[in-house]
Length: 285
Image (cartoon, rainbow, N blue to C red; front, side, top):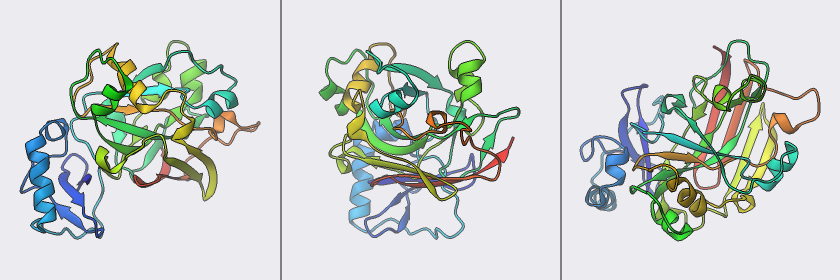
């Protein structure tokens, strides 16, 4: 299933995209697309049955905002330097263990919402990423296979980063990762049964119509199942938590000088095969 949330920010309602591409209203069946729904097999089966029976009312998508596909996110866990080619372009050695940092859930916005360039920023950068959404509580998992079994679905994420704040201002990466609007997510949560191999997905990103990133999850250093297993050894993952699994080569930081960092007025578009497409216009905060 392709689950999503539509409507004005803070007042989204649950929906799904059916096999014909029609937007369907789920608000008569479930309260929201969130961790509670993803952990409830009975409710998910009810949604599937209603969709297959043609019982869900259609929504007029014209002018309807698409919000983040998950509500009430508990935490956003991010994996840094998780592609061989991205590590090379930044001059870093491939890590021996996953590099883990957190983004605050309030950085998450809809896939087509405005992204704000922080005040004083000179190095706002783009990063297309595969996001993993947890469907079962995960703690101290023993194998990558267990990790995959705890995934509810997948989504497209834009891990926007401010590189000066991240690298040159002291401390950890958090200052460059948690600026307002720095995690567009969606348009859909695609349930895991529709993504048979998360290591076979193409990722692309364009800036002002020019292709900048063109990668594949096959190049991840730590694949999805291993990432979930590893993170579960350090923190408990709950239904509805999100893991951004890293970005391939092609970011502005990896380019020759003058590096083409983002500015107000730029337009970023990104997509992952089967998981949809995003478009954001950048404006000054």
